[in-house]
Amino acid sequence: MIAEKILDFRDAAVVDAHCHGFSQKHVLEADPSGWLDRLTLMGMCLGSSNSVDKELIHLVPEMTRSTLLTIAAQRWLAAFFKCTPEAVPAQRQAALQADPAGYIKRLLSDQNVVGLFVDEGYPQPRVAPEDFEALTGTPVHRVVRIEPLILSAIQDTDNLADFEERYVQLLKQAAIDPRTVAFKTIIAYRTGLDVEQPDPAQVPKSFLEWKASGWKEDRAVSKPVRDHLLHVALGVANDVKMPFHIHTGGGDPDVLLHYARPSLLKPLLSRYISHPVVLIHCGYPWMEEAAFLAAIFPRAYVELSVMTPWSTLYIDRALELFLGSVPANKLFHGSDEASEPELIWLAARQTKAALKRVLGRAVDFDMLSIEDADRIGKGVLSRNALALHGLPA
Ligand SMILES: [Zn+2]
Image (cartoon, rainbow, N blue to C red; front, side):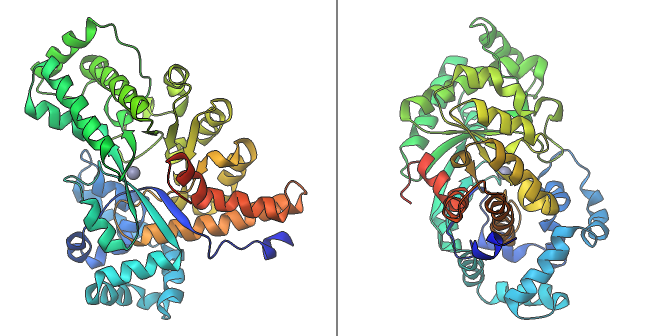
């Protein structure tokens, strides 16, 4: 591994193309004894899920102790704090209590994080982008989720025509904010990725049934309306030339896993073939499907969160899949941080180290020159996401 020694992404700029906001109050009030648990996928998902018995949280600490990510996180943060791994939770708590913004800024600048694409749909109510930017010291770009806009429009009116007018107004309002860089849908959590083109007569009927059910989410009832509203949003996104982010693959236990496979998106991608669509979470665990879609649809892109940071050892293999089969300028680093600031740091650190190993091997195999590998790695870390979303490098 000669090239691996030469390639170095430690100081490379990072754009986290998918994360969630948190407030100073949230980080200060979260129970410090559960901090490591909230770094695990299990702990984070139990926090965000509405369908899981929250009592099960007592099972998490035992699992945390044998989760590779948290074991490594404690060692890596020990080097950051210059203390022993055992002392990390106390050191971290002291740093956070003394100066929350100072600590978070130190973490992000340690990995040279220069931009955050924030999915505003979680947590709700959303963290104001100005506040998140002040807390992180990092430019915050809005990714506007359509589902809270649908909910907000429903609260304003339950008449379909007025509702739709209000919804379009909210979409357009969000789009003109200079911070907004993309729209996003989590339709995989609502009615599934197998989005159809509903019959025009079906939408009002489905809307009335949905209303009568008290807005209960049910594929049999709300799918035609949800599908229709996604088409409406894609129409607005097309008018304002804004990429569309789509949650693909697993998430917390609330996701409709049977209807979350990226390949289900093929009809939608075909219909909007010239519109940029980002497959959020790289379709994890169906990563081959996401890679294939991005390899054949010219405007399908892949954001790598969930795979990173939580796949740890598997990150190298996943990067081999994506870098090996997808044009590399279509790949974006992301963390899916939705609980604790350290996840942004951990994901960036892991992607940098894995890119160094995987691209280093590609150089040793005579697939790439060092210059190619360096350019490709820096693209995945920041430049690709900035370019697609019209932001300066
Ligand atoms: Zn997310």
